[in-house]
Length: 451
Image (tube, rainbow, N blue to C red):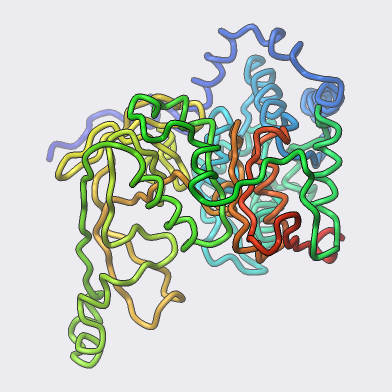
């Protein structure tokens, strides 16, 4: 191939900084004051404190704490918009891919900071002091890190250690700022109940009578997805603002299948291609012990099922980061608009890319080695139906109408709080409880986590 005659990097400069300059141009074309005027009193207090620290180069670390639906993301984007409109570089990251889509210019913390997947006590980020990333961070005025408590402490420490090194400064994070604050819920009664759920150490909690109770799964589906049997009802806006949550993967799969059976239309079936990893294929003892039929029956977490059934108009969720910049990451919800043999066409339902068209191909996926005693590869569309999601997968998402299947109680810290806080009003939550416990459910809170 012919060699370039000019130094392209010298002409263009740092491509990462160039990307942020595009955000500066967008911010400067926006009336920032209109956005600032929409802040409530609590948000305005945090905004003033954080922006003052940024503009005066104090290098302060802020931690923002607030219940779900209190406008934290709006505050982050407002702060970033103001700083970018003045030409400052703001790096916005989140702990999960779906949460990063809600931040303007957001990326996951792992991809932005090159945090090792197997992070240890003494780990550092995977870029050198002379790299493009290091140059970007030295020019950065503010770092916003959403959902930082969800990360292992070693991740934060690795970023801190690396930024101190590249900035030649022993102050926290190399004298960069970090984000966060406190705001109040508008619905005081609902806020008080959610706070009780989040900190109450009692194992059994009573469900308020103001929350709608369903008698069976069919009623829950009807409450969250009214007129599901009418094809024209399923639109991007309709699906975007509603979901059903459950604690276990098996229950989520059963709800999704039940919803798909009610939804009208032709069913498209896609079968996966499973095989052993190349190293295991040459070992007859492993191959004979785990034939293809056995591989097809497996349903490892994070992987699509061997048999995927879809209908045009049904919601799906991505299981892999395909193109985070285009809004396609692990957890993104989409609505199927066309089913072809080798590709699925869908519209994005979450984040600032809402409504954009996406094309999803088959890809080869390998489950974590910790999940099973052998290695396999499944080639399939990296999607699952998304009428229902697991509670853990719903973190970072807000919807208008939510249904919670509590026939199987929650089993880990904070799950009930996460499920009930996906929307901000009692009258838009529907709950399905076991027949023998119609008024209460299990709640799990570990006091050592709160301390």
